[in-house]
Image 1 (cartoon, rainbow, N blue to C red):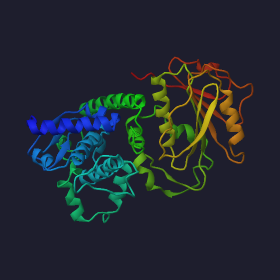
Image 2: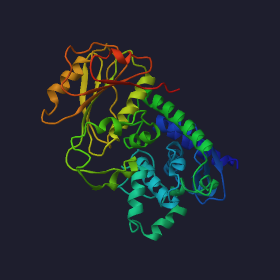
Image 3: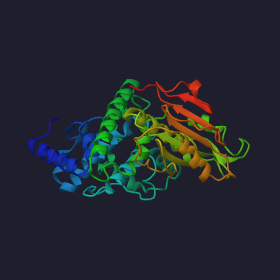
Image 4: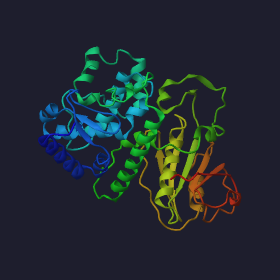
Amino acid sequence: MKLEPDIERIVSASLLRLRMKSPFFATLALFTHFQATQTLPTAATDGKDIFINPDFVRSLRSPEVDGLLLHEVLHAALLHVPRRGQREPILWNIAADIVVNGMIVGQPGFELPAGGIRNRQLEHLSVEEIYEILLKNTTFYEISQLDLLNQAPADASGDGRESSSSDTGSLNKAKQASLETHWKNAIQQALVVARSSNSQGSVPAGMQRELGALTRAQLDWRSYLWRYLVQTPTDFTGFDRRFIGRGLYLEALEGESVQVFVAVDTSGSVGDGEMRMFLSEVLGILSAYPHLKCELYYADAEAYGPYSLTPDSSIPKPVGGGGTSFVPFFEKVSANRDWHSSGVCVYLTDGYGTFPEEPPPLPVLWVVTPGGLGLEHFPFGEAVRLLSVN
């Protein structure tokens, strides 16, 4: 249903405010369409378009309108509809609301309409992780609180508009692929706009984890890093359910796990496309094992860092742009690492640069761009090549 003139003005004014507050979010909003509906009490999304109840929108103050529309945009952009799969829709919906609302309240100038679900202890987690917590703890929310789902903007991702399209409650593969392509393109453009903007906080810290669910690493980092684990597969103590949300159906490791020293080539020969590929692999490394310890360096002819990262960390802005030498990274790792612990060095690069004369004491995995140096020309370590992504 087409928006009435007064609602169209309200939405347009909200989008203009959104552009002033956050170029990143405003760019995402350009990739959806707003439609009016009387069949929903508040608002919802089918994964691409956003449906709003005109009477409900009229009842809100401007900051609440901004919060409502951003709430729906984030549900769509973060693929909360297709990511649900066959999960229980109400609990998934609440988990998605906790994540999205946590992002919104962290932004100045936005407010949630009354009834928006919040949980400060969980909102830093991914939707999948929160869902597993809710699934195991049926008393986490009172039934009356669950009923808020049908009264607040929190009902965005689970309204069933698309999820009822099959008996399994999941989207068909063609629809899911279309949504993923649409929003990945939107997010890439939003990131470009955010990087070129002078405004601070264009991309909220809590967004990094959710973006990691959309931009998958090419390499199976669990398999690559498994050989470097300090402990053997017989050193497990039981099933660790805390990390199911990251796809980690593994036993709980006792004590220390693997130490990873990551270098990202930021020399002038690395373009934006290659940099996006590199950072996707860094996110893949961080999500590989729950006890993983990661130190990130950016490197051109110098090495910048280390940045200590955990699976919850945001990736710092790349530094560099000069020539290429692989020597400074290995020198810094040798100087800074704990010699009583094992570890592995991962270097993401096009391979064109100066190599150390002697191999470092730690094993090295070179991750090479499409069209980069031939794998046989790396003087030490193991080398793998990334595939070109259109």
